[in-house]
Amino acid sequence: MLVQLVRPLVRTQVQMLAQAQSASGKLVGMVSQWLGYLGIHAEVTQLQTTGNRIQVSLCVGKPEQCTEAEWQKILDNLNQDVDTTPTADALTYTAMPPAHQSKVQRLLASILHASGQDPLADWPALRPRLVAMGMEESMLTGIHSALKVPMPMELLVEQLEPEVAAFVLSKAIHIALLDQQISRAEDTALKALLNAVDSGANREAVA
Image (cartoon, rainbow, N blue to C red):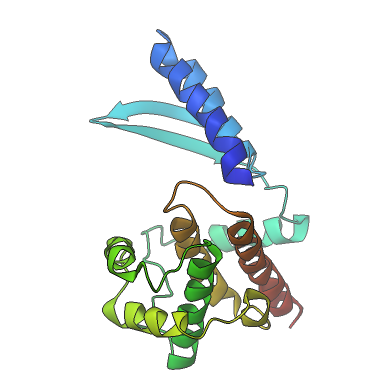
C-alpha cells in the first residue's frame, strides 16, 4: 500500500528538515525525491518562501509511465497553447449526465463498504465528513441510496469512462483515508479505479 509505505518516510524527512539549519538544499532534494515516488523526474530551479508558504519552480522531465510519443504530444500541445491561465476542473458532478452521476454514487458507495464498517449505520457521523469534502446534497442522497444495494467494484468499473473514474478516484482516496489507514479491500478498490482510468485512456487513444 503506497500511502502506508511512503508516509513514514516523508514524516521522517519533514522532521529532518525542521531540525536543519540550512534547509534549502535538503528541501530541493526532498521535493525531487517525493515526485520520484510517482515516477516523475523533476529538478527544482527556484525555491523561496512567500508568507507562510513555500514557492517552488520545477523543471519536469518525462514521467516513467509516459511513452515517448505521449510526451512529445504533450510538449507539442503546450507549445501551441499560448493561454497559461489556470482553468477549473473540466468535469464536475453537477455537469455530468444522470447516468454518470449514478455511476459516481455507486462507486463511492462501494468504496464506503470496502472500509469494513457499516456506512449505513454510521451515516449520521459519516455524512458531515463527506460534506466537508465538498460533496453536493444530490450526490450524498444518491450515495445513501446506493449503499442500500451495494454492487461489486469489478462490475462497476467495466467500461467505465476514464474521466468519471478519475473524478471518483480523487474522492475515493479521501474516503479511504478517513480512518487514517487503507484496508486491503479499499486498496483493491482504489487500484481497480486506477486501472479503469488507465484502460479507458488507452481505449480512447486507440480510437
